[in-house]
Image (cartoon, rainbow over all chains, first blue to last red; front, side):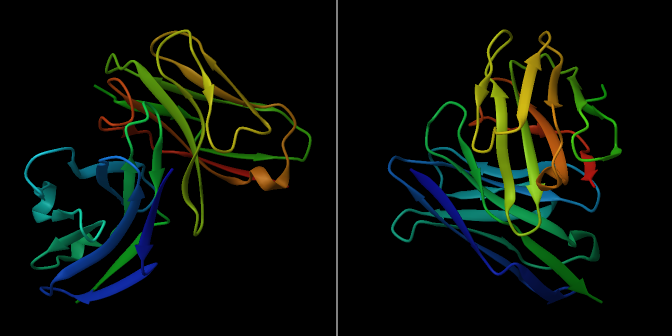
Length: 113
Length: 113
């Protein structure tokens, strides 16, 4: 079985401040982990993904995430928030089943000028 | 390269009416998916097609049917719409398997009265 928990359905940060979006997963096997972003009235697009190897993964738009097996976490960070980062962010896990990706419930990021 | 396209963008139905949501991709992907997105629930998989000629149920298939018409097209049919099917529907595709990046369409916003 696999599951994803995203802590905080809404997060607000000031422009220029650190962005930290939390994701914890449950998986019985080494997982594939993803972060997707959804801008208003659009579909989701991939920010970054972890498969194997280096645990710090860099994505688009300055985002990165670190896979921590001991903590079963895959938190998303960005050093300095920009107004254009305002969107909804989804963490997702695939435990190796060919077609089974489970999405978290999403975190809406608000950036305050 | 249009990516993943969906029609229609918006639809209002009365309870009991039927309709088909259309999806097409031009990336020569093998796998295609239908999700529904509801507030606070993230994305839930309705049906998927691992490859042309195959379809399988996802997490919430009741009330829906699908057809993988060819490699490009994957349609979702509501035979007798219910208010509980009011949602935003996303089609997605991946080269092969959901452990690869999924590319999402812009969504169809469906209201069932």
